[in-house]
Length: 360
Image (cartoon, rainbow, N blue to C red; front, top):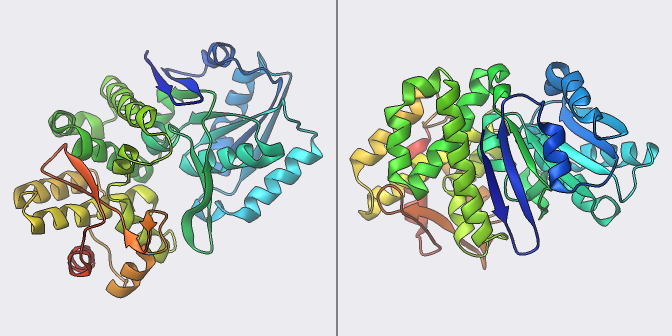
């Protein structure tokens, strides 16, 4: 299988793609993690399926292995859950040499990283993502955090892991809805960075839907390469990395206002449709490209619109986003497929039209 290296200003680490957990101890040793006590932070669903398996896989290296789970779902991603994790670590005498692992989907990884970045001013942290979305996106790059007062990821930090270990076989147990949500992030890479990759997704969509192991391994590896390239050039989102937020501006607002009834990837899908609608209105993207995007998203059962929301509410919610600077929204748009750019030069009318386009 494959390894991809992420190089940031202060840290270099590997993303190892493997089948199974049998090579996890080798990845740990290679990473230079020195602590012998680890807390695996995971959700209640992943603990039931993989709890014992992960414990066995890392017991070869760690003298003490603890598993701390939380109720699965975005609604657990808050400071109350984090506080409970701090207490667990203190009660079990975790110190500065201890290690925290984020094991599961994006929620587990984001929270585990945030806990690691703040507990005792920062302890070693590793990512072991099990969902497609986490494997291709959220586990790589060091963005960690929690939701607060109904706003997504508003409390957080940049905190790079010591390694990312991707067992591609965990996709076998991933619910269909979660797989579809992950595909939204996969499609995003094609739209913002590579028309060749976008066409590859189109050409292999049947095999992808069947979760063909070779195709999925290739897709995950390619997405990790894209993410590693962007993060290595712009760790803290001062420039290029912002393009990874394509579909996330309106998407995050919808996700919050729907009170997480729609999961993250679904909202990103809707957000990408709205962003491309702006591109069409500007004459930078063809209507055919927008129609094809909607067709591809729909093929993977990713929604392209939603109901029950007010246009003004979505617009106002956007201004609570981290991407707002000097009361201006930084929007990611594209010129065709594969060429993304960031702009704050966008009118209210353009945004309102884009929101209206995805609200039933």
